[in-house]
Amino acid sequence: MENYDLIVIGSGPAGRRAAIQAAKIGRSVLVVENRLRVGGVSVHTGTIPSKTLRETVLNLSGWRERGFYGLAYRVKKDIEGKDLGARLRMTLDHEIDVLEHQFARNGVRTVAGKARFVDPHTIAVKNGGDSEYSFGFANAVIAVGTAPYRPRHIPFNETSVFDSDNVASDPRVPKSLTVVGAGVIGLEYATIFSAMDVPVTLVEPREQFLEFIDREIIEEFVHELRKRGMQLRLGVKVETVEIDNQGWTVSTLSDGRKIRTEMLLYAAGRVGATAGLGLETCGLEADDRGRLKVDAKTFQTTVPHIYAAGDVIGFPSLASTSMEQGRIAACHAFGAPMPPAPEYFPYGIYAVPEISTVGLTEAEVKAKNIPYECGIARFRETSRGHIMGLQGGMMKLIFSLKTRRLLGAHIIGEGATELVHIGQAVLNLKGTVDYFVENAFNYPTLAEAYKIAALDAFNRMPGRDVGGASAIN
Image (cartoon, rainbow, N blue to C red; front, side, top):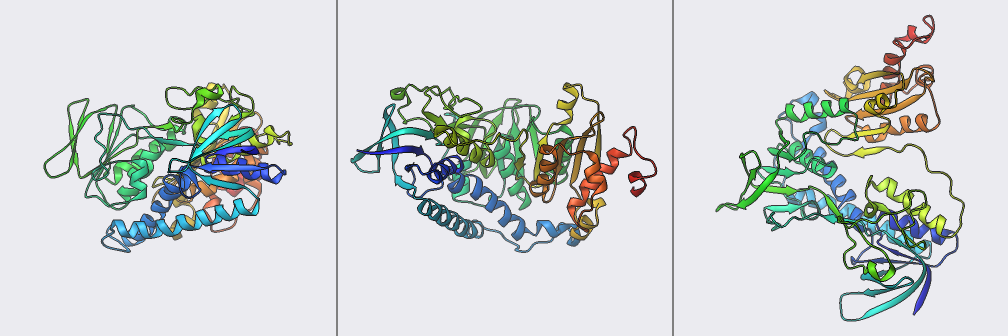
């Protein structure tokens, strides 16, 4: 039986970062992936496919140019599933090649197969046939990710009723679409299909969605969705889904209404992919959603030499944070120095329009009783926004009145997930409103919105220099 310093189960963002970090400090590492090729959910059915699909749709639909050329503008008149799939396959092949090379360059061994714990220091890997191989380990990282939640009353058939994994792996362009679930995944797919002018109805049992995002950003987002005709059914549940004699889906809601669409995407939650891992043999137990509980600082499970990272431990379930969790777990396992995690990290929601945010929301600032001021900038107010033909998009900055420090940056619109990193840096470096007011930004850029939003707040803040920076505005 081969023995390793670290065995990582799963090769998504958390698993790959844990494995490479351990290899870089001279440890022997084995990565077990239940797919034939590495990459995990992130590469094969999650992050990379959905973002590739988004970019393809925005390009082929001419979405970004409609501000100039009108709502009828199209780069390609009839977009088909094969148009979406071509770019997807090219992107996935490239991502996998890069990852395989990265593992090889760092001396990380990979094996394909389903892993299960035999005891607290041994796993068995079955690779399709009847053969099973055992490997010993000093430490392990469970980074198996999640799988779509598939309730029994939803008739998944992969022809008209899909979950978020199979809708990404074999994209189609339906005549109409129902999306169940207004979480991050549901909203991303709902808005991507809507950008192709597919009539979309979004169903969400809660009255509100994305509660962790600043409400003013969500209000802007909802306005954008309604403006382009998306139907929002909030506060109602899908009681039943049936397939009619034409193969279309008919959803009955808890308020009695019915929705008939050619396709239905069920995206109401995901569960940790821990079934079949044999957790009981090593003293671990998952919760009712298949997730594992860990120490928030070290990512150790209740069995100290076994760690868990990524989506399998729950919120925030972001690729970026999963990578950091995997790195921290590997460092802690082998006593390597661990710089403290940043206090604030950005969220990115790749909807159309995209949303990104870092720091405190206005509601959180109020709850902490922090005296504050907000500044708003509309992208259409910037020269770059005019050049790009942007009709929507905004940035909201929140500052402390006492310390003048940036407390939160919240963005919706083109480039939001890129722009947010300026706010992230200033926030974690404890920068103030004066940074934005006193520094020059490239012109014309959307980043200029930081100065506009900062001046908007600055001009209402007490103690400002009337003859100085405020004269700019």
